[in-house]
Length: 437
Image (cartoon, rainbow, N blue to C red; front, side):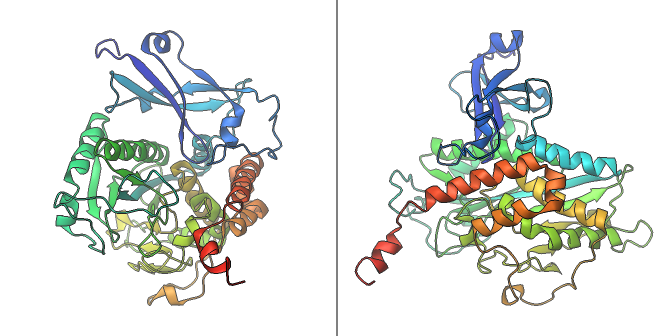
């Protein structure tokens, strides 16, 4: 820090929504006394800035959390005016115990359950997002930005290289910011919607990859703002275009690095591969709220436009909620396509891995694979946020993995957000109900 003239340090944690919260301090103060305090209510803040009060915690005294920096997460803040660093912190209670509601700690708990069995999960998230014109009035719908050609993209141009080039100023800035922070981007592609992009990250350990997604979402927003546009990770920003997902590829290795989903002799899929799928099919209904955490999330999960409506599985089948990509035996994995880009990356990985863990432990056989169009099959995902929250609240198995304290807090926050949403009258209601009913 002294060698590079660092002036400020951003001490950050991810709240339940995945928003970076924390404090900024002079570099000299950080070097003298690393670690900060934040109120416990940080973890039951709703997306609209209120607090969920019915969480069974000391809301009225609101005691401090102790935040301890994980120095391995230290990264530059390349968009800052002065040389700055950002460091992700872990949350502890005042008596030194791990705070069970902090999303990074929730994921760590799931990973530790795997490690206790001699298993080591490997993940690779894919992040989809839209670029749009600056939207300063929420009463107006989004519009695609003007590209370098001077025109707006209106239709679907999936995988078009020229469409990617339309936004090369933003993409180059994303690359520059990623390079400044030491991140490797696997690929950037044009997705199905207008000005919808996808960034794929290289596979790795879950906590490290969740940290990367946490950093990347902020990085992408900053690159867009510096280029005069907005970037949104909202699951369904346009009613007539594809939503934005965070597809999660998952495999599990043993202590020697061997993929337990493949037989080392024959290369064929092992029973563990099936158990992992079976765990997703059995338990993911109850985990859906963690990967589809808002009312808007369920507009995406309608069984069309590349979003699943069930937990079928199939080989290289993008209509299923669980896709098995074609690969060599060492790369055999399960892709969960349910998670949305709006999800907190720590909680999305915790949810998907928790269901896989339960499948492995309970040796749950999967349903038969689907070879046709899974969109035409019966849905088996929650139809709304409240359905999903109720299922999570009632899941004994997920409570055992994620802890009662976390589940109760998360559900209380989601119920508070839903109550706030119900206070808002939509244009559809004014259009069709005002004079007709």
